[in-house]
Amino acid sequence: MEDCIFCKIIRGEIPSIKVYEDDEILAFNDVNPAAPIHILVIPKKHINSLADMKPEDEKLVGKIYGVINKIAEDKGFKDEGFRVIVNCGKNGGQEVMHLHFHILAGKQLGEKIV
Image (cartoon, rainbow, N blue to C red; front, side, top):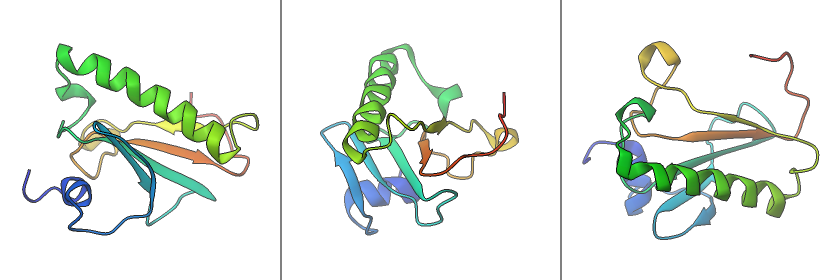
């Protein structure tokens, strides 16, 4: 998608502080962090949201969860705990229409949402 901010980050048109990258996935620090550690993990393939995921994307999304666990271990917050959030669509709070996973860590995150 030409006008997608995350696609522009993937293409290097917008700078980011990368935390992880491979052929299919990019993780970078959120520019407006909601916690001391706030990392966004995105597929390089443009998928609008979780609701738009196709069966062939299931392996990629599973891999993303493995990458999230690796980041948590590499950054040293795995044992203390962290939150993973995926907003889906307008009513779900999704602001950028490119599937992305928020990793929040580095402090007690307050009340449980679920």
